[in-house]
Length: 216
Figure 1 (tube, rainbow, N blue to C red):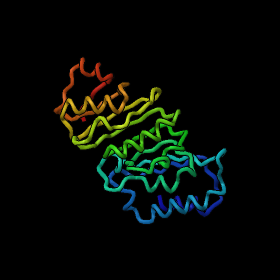
Figure 2: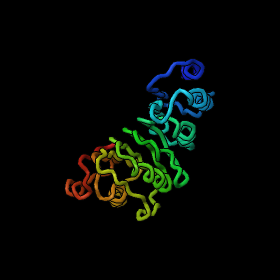
Figure 3: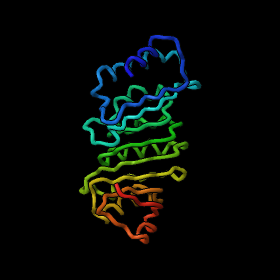
Figure 4: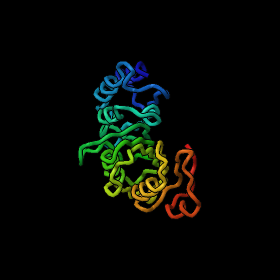
């Protein structure tokens, strides 16, 4: 992938879309020259695109999305946004400065698969996504500690977005119910993934407005 990105940097080709996919099990931060090559690509191609004709990009970091990562994917998005038009993203997002959230200007973002590890990171994500109107699907992995103050958890306002929520490592039924209710602003979600030990009744799922519940 490094060589392909370098070719794009040093030739005059102008692709409409770019799909960056890192294999599962590989941390993008461990790939030599990857981040610096992304920066170089931005600098070398910025004169080929503009706001009316941006480069559309998909970025998929399944290792960050599926597994815990001490470093979120923020640095890669920080390099590219808002210079590109992010269409799909898969990764792990952390805490961002209020008013400068990474996804806040990604108005054409359609699909987002993201891992969140604390309430402050969730607050940053909510601030971004509640401004976006074209998001079709949000798959949210919530790996927050049970000690989190649920009443201070930010709520999405995404009426036209299909929301999928995965809550690993938690078996406290009451905690899960309250978090799902709070995060979705009482609007529920299309599908909830929980640990094997968690077993909600149909009545409880109806109360939570969860259409489907599956085991992790």
